[in-house]
Amino acid sequence: MRRDSRRPKPGARRDVIVAGGVQAARQRLLERVRAAVQAQARLPVDLDVVERLAWQRVEAAATAAAADVEAIIDALDLDAIILAVACAGGQARAIREFESRYFGPATAAVRRMGLSQERQLDALSQTRTILFVGDDPAQPRILELVGKGDLRALVKVVAVRRALNLQRADRSLQIESSEALVHAIAEQTSPELGALQGQQRALIKEALSAALAGLDAEARTLLRLSLLHQLSIDELAAMHHIHRSTVARRLAKIRDALRAALHERLRVALGSSSPDLESMLRIVHSGLDISFDRLLAP
Image (cartoon, rainbow, N blue to C red; front, side, top):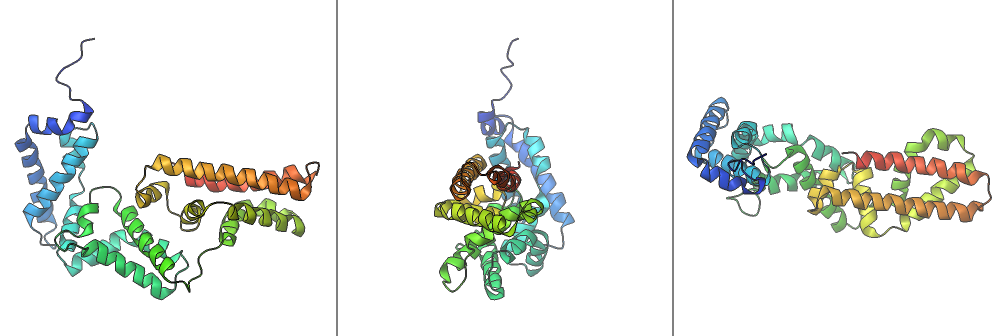
């Protein structure tokens, strides 16, 4: 079959916008922006600023993916862009509305991090400063984030970073120990673990604790963020500026390392011929699998 030479290649999408009529595309976008700004009249914003920011997102999306420019324009969340522009302009009403819409997961994540209430407020306050003021008042961070993904997840990443910095800076805070990770994994096996004798339960928890202690600091941090603070793979990838598949591979490697360490420690403690070894390994492996299956879920 003869290939249609008019069909654009995915990698040449930006050239297609230009060659295919940038004026028509921008006019279509401008019409959408005008209608959205009019509908959001409670938030007075500069039409040109909204249109320019929206066009940047169109260009970026068209360059990255083989999608129709019209479809990209129609899919833009212009309400979020308008709200972000209003927030960057320091409008108190807009900032309150933004926080109501997008700060929920960030606030919940910071609360789970073991910070004092004062430090939680500090972390969220610093998050607001980063988003709505930034190092460059002419370009607050919110204008960089809007239109680039799930805003709730992106705000959550900013907040968790600030909270982690506060944890490191305040040496009086008790950073989560391996006991918290042991508890998080053991929770997944609570029925089976509860059926064991007290000595066997203690042995499993000791083996888990030792296996976790054997991980390097980077691996323990990744587990803490995913298991205790419940950051998704996408949020971890954004935090570390790596691809989600890299995070998934690291988590899978950590799981395999824990399985091997647990097997060895229980084998040494119980003996290779112990009738309890296989059943105890099955319980521990079940807890690991459930925990990591949730973390590695797409």
